[in-house]
Image (cartoon, rainbow over all chains, first blue to last red; front, side, top):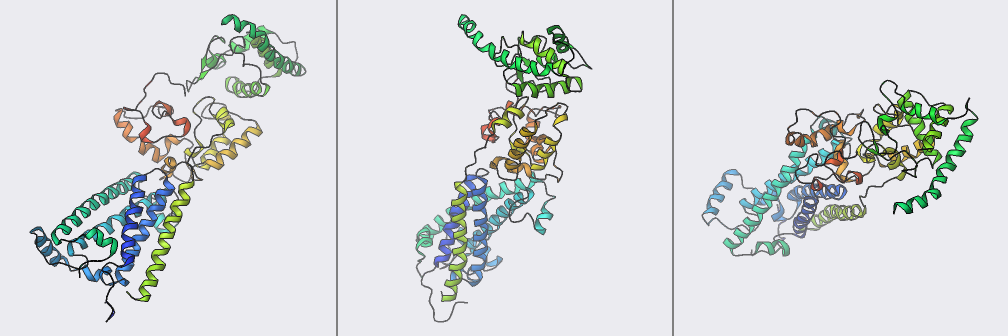
Length: 191
Length: 123
Length: 178
């Protein structure tokens, strides 16, 4: 709950914004390097995982519109809103709208699967943060080829999500007549 | 060009002869009889349980050989064709160790090494 | 946003980004060139490809070095000096002790007692399963995969990336020297 009497300076606080663009940077660094430069690739991957964790924490203790409570409306309301959106309607949300919320969940989940599967591959090789842990010994029996498939697929899936995310942001920008990309840079949205 | 090669040969072959000569001096102290090329030739072509020097070096030391299993090409053994041969003592000893053991199941005696060196240096 | 939030955000996100940027920068400095050793190439490349140390874990190399007298049916003995030198080189650059990225996956699902031949590693067999189908082979004929260079032309430089495989990979030229 926001503190009484304190208005948020911007819709998107600096941390949400920095988080968002850092995530873009580190994810694409890891994705473009693929299996080359494994040290850099994995380090970028760890950073992505940590950023996701940050967002989860920030969604609980962060500013008004960063909190999950602000944009989680439940499945029924989400579906209703999506139907309205497809017809060019639906109310305007200052923070994330329910469609954006769906994308956020999908992205966070996909990124988690990607990073965890990557760390699992390292664990199979006896290295990385999961290697000497209980989780690591559980992973040891998994087939490397299978885990690699999961890692590759979820990485590609994330890219597709990003494509749809960008298209969605552009569409919403047109619909609501505001530049949502600039908003994620400056933090300012029409109240 | 080949003519030129012949001119250079006397300069190169002595190097092989020098190394061989020094080695033979040492080996002679441990050998029973004087070394002969005939004996060396016989050892080279001897077949023991399907293995022989010729297994890899083939019937002619003037041509290329190939590793029996890996197919790797082996430069000719004859110094007259390949002046690099018999110039490095360490190398000669290394291959004696490995190849005698593989071929005959044991190290070659000083006598055998001397005989082989005499024969090979004349090729 | 109150002071607590600002502090928390700065601390957490700040540390993460410091970790991220610093680590990426530091790791980007490392080159991944395969460090070659002349003696190793001369002695261990005399009959076959001088296999890059990063292809096998140290334990496997120890096994190889201890069995040189009967090296898969051949005698590959070294003198004490050569053996010491090569053992040290192999220990330094073996799989798992830092080497080119392309090799890293060879360590996957590797048992404690790793085989002495990289062609028997689970990850190796996985990676070449695709090739098996392409060549319509039911089983690997003995020693088939030893001539790495038939398909991996830059094997001598420890470059095994898929992108470097020539099109339509498979043995492309007859009697290639090992």
